[in-house]
Image (cartoon, rainbow, N blue to C red; front, side, top):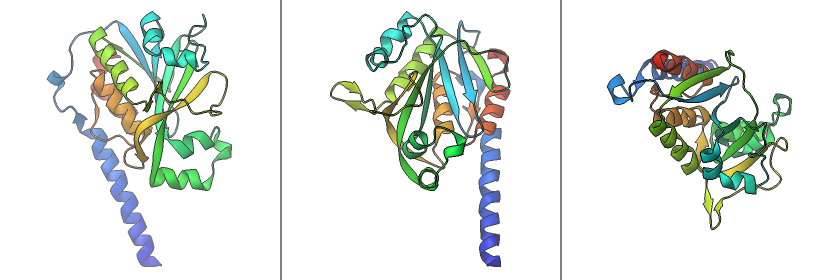
Length: 226
């Protein structure tokens, strides 16, 4: 029993050390690899204790690119719509855990091992800034387009385009779609967010499995864009 506890403690410390190191080492390593100058397109990163999302401001171009969302019944054309909020995550945990009070054992086990993935899209109104769980960044049009490309490429595709998951959603303002890739404890929702931000010309930590490490690194290495 003592041997098992020592092994468990060692594993926990190893993961914590790797996460800390992953936040401290920037990706890309050199600022020169990131576009310089201030941009005019403001994107938001949203966080909760275990998950991060990216909020994209809605305009006509964004509506055209993600027209399939309106086709699935999302109110992207509503005058109150200000942002499309995108997140990638494990299928079981995402679909079966609408609130913290409804956490179940099996989705947690799948999240810690291997699970298929889904995209979650939410239509939001105004998102207040400043806010402790909201970070905004100004990027240029080229990187904004690259970010939209990255998000769009994360959706699983069927004969008619992205595949909406029937009868899945937390409200009338969100939908779940099949996604590309597999989810696990090492490559999860926050590493997806980090990769999306890098496509937008931002620097992140080298490996950001937790919101706190992504939050710390992205704010540290992109101060000029805040």
